[in-house]
Length: 83
Image (cartoon, rainbow, N blue to C red; front, side, top):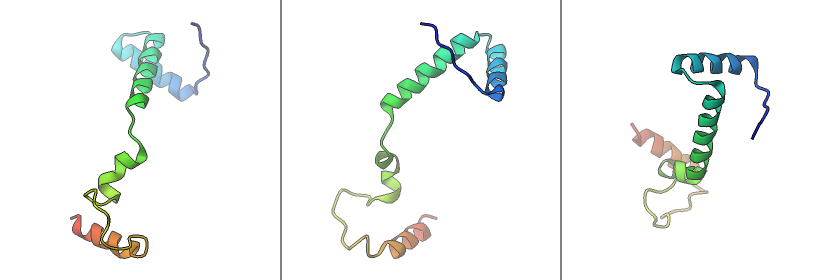
Protein backbone atom coordinates (compact mmCIF):
# COMPACT_ATOMS: atom_id res chain seq x y z
CA UNK A 1 0.00 0.00 0.00
CA UNK A 2 1.55 3.33 -1.01
CA UNK A 3 1.89 5.91 1.74
CA UNK A 4 3.27 9.42 1.56
CA UNK A 5 4.73 11.07 4.63
CA UNK A 6 6.40 14.45 5.03
CA UNK A 7 9.41 14.35 7.30
CA UNK A 8 11.71 17.14 8.42
CA UNK A 9 14.93 17.65 6.46
CA UNK A 10 17.06 16.61 9.44
CA UNK A 11 15.20 13.30 9.73
CA UNK A 12 15.48 12.70 5.99
CA UNK A 13 19.25 13.28 6.14
CA UNK A 14 19.65 10.93 9.10
CA UNK A 15 17.54 8.33 7.32
CA UNK A 16 19.68 8.60 4.19
CA UNK A 17 22.88 8.21 6.26
CA UNK A 18 21.42 5.22 8.13
CA UNK A 19 20.39 3.55 4.87
CA UNK A 20 23.81 4.10 3.30
CA UNK A 21 25.57 2.62 6.35
CA UNK A 22 23.27 -0.40 6.49
CA UNK A 23 22.90 -0.84 2.72
CA UNK A 24 19.10 -0.84 2.74
CA UNK A 25 16.50 1.28 0.98
CA UNK A 26 14.65 4.10 2.72
CA UNK A 27 11.41 2.16 2.28
CA UNK A 28 12.86 -0.90 3.98
CA UNK A 29 14.23 1.19 6.86
CA UNK A 30 10.86 2.86 7.40
CA UNK A 31 9.04 -0.50 7.26
CA UNK A 32 11.39 -1.95 9.88
CA UNK A 33 11.10 1.10 12.11
CA UNK A 34 7.30 1.04 11.98
CA UNK A 35 7.23 -2.68 12.67
CA UNK A 36 9.55 -2.24 15.68
CA UNK A 37 7.51 0.71 16.94
CA UNK A 38 4.18 -1.09 16.68
CA UNK A 39 5.56 -4.27 18.24
CA UNK A 40 6.99 -2.29 21.15
CA UNK A 41 3.68 -0.46 21.63
CA UNK A 42 1.87 -3.78 22.03
CA UNK A 43 4.30 -4.94 24.72
CA UNK A 44 4.48 -1.51 26.37
CA UNK A 45 3.95 -1.41 30.09
CA UNK A 46 1.71 1.09 31.78
CA UNK A 47 3.35 4.07 33.51
CA UNK A 48 2.50 2.42 36.82
CA UNK A 49 4.25 -0.79 35.85
CA UNK A 50 7.34 1.11 34.70
CA UNK A 51 7.69 3.06 37.93
CA UNK A 52 6.17 0.67 40.43
CA UNK A 53 9.51 -0.19 42.02
CA UNK A 54 10.41 3.51 42.29
CA UNK A 55 7.25 5.05 43.69
CA UNK A 56 5.17 2.40 45.35
CA UNK A 57 5.68 0.26 48.37
CA UNK A 58 8.06 -2.63 47.76
CA UNK A 59 5.34 -5.11 48.69
CA UNK A 60 1.69 -5.49 47.89
CA UNK A 61 0.80 -4.90 51.54
CA UNK A 62 -1.22 -1.84 52.48
CA UNK A 63 0.91 1.10 53.69
CA UNK A 64 1.37 1.29 57.45
CA UNK A 65 0.72 5.04 57.52
CA UNK A 66 -1.11 7.74 55.60
CA UNK A 67 1.15 8.15 52.58
CA UNK A 68 -0.66 11.25 51.30
CA UNK A 69 -0.21 13.03 54.63
CA UNK A 70 3.50 12.13 54.94
CA UNK A 71 4.62 12.33 51.31
CA UNK A 72 7.44 14.81 51.84
CA UNK A 73 9.01 12.90 54.69
CA UNK A 74 8.62 9.55 52.97
CA UNK A 75 10.21 10.80 49.74
CA UNK A 76 13.06 12.46 51.63
CA UNK A 77 13.72 9.24 53.56
CA UNK A 78 13.51 7.20 50.38
CA UNK A 79 16.02 9.35 48.49
CA UNK A 80 18.43 9.49 51.42
CA UNK A 81 18.38 5.70 51.74
CA UNK A 82 18.75 5.13 47.98
CA UNK A 83 22.51 5.80 48.01
